[in-house]
Length: 163
Image (tube, rainbow, N blue to C red; front, side, top):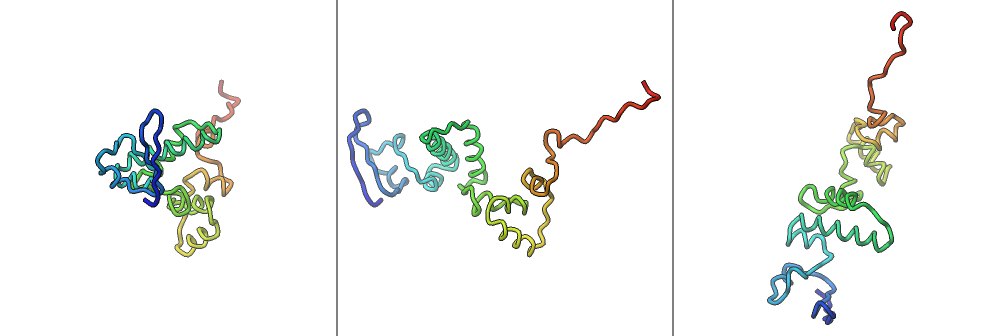
């Protein structure tokens, strides 16, 4: 913690604002109310309070940021993002070094960022893309296997001899 500001808030009493964070140590200080203690350090929350607390923090931070900008997004979409970021018990970024960079599909990775690097690396490794996702099928111009693209049964025209 580099800097501290103590303010008396009308309905909350004294509140301490800090630059920097050490959640574990702060929670161990006598007189600190753990229920009113917050931080914006997601990794610290995951380490001290667990991955579920970090997931909830991601949801709250993302939702509040979008609302402040006047963007209304269904909370379930944000929950899905938070679940994807925390599914393996650690907090991972959504980006080329996190969740999106770890996809098994070559074309899906290439569609996200640094296309040439992904394609070159995959070709050196001899990777094969099975075209199992939406992005991969769109890239190669193939119908997507969802909705009307999932139908394999087509009704034939009635023959003249049958009624």
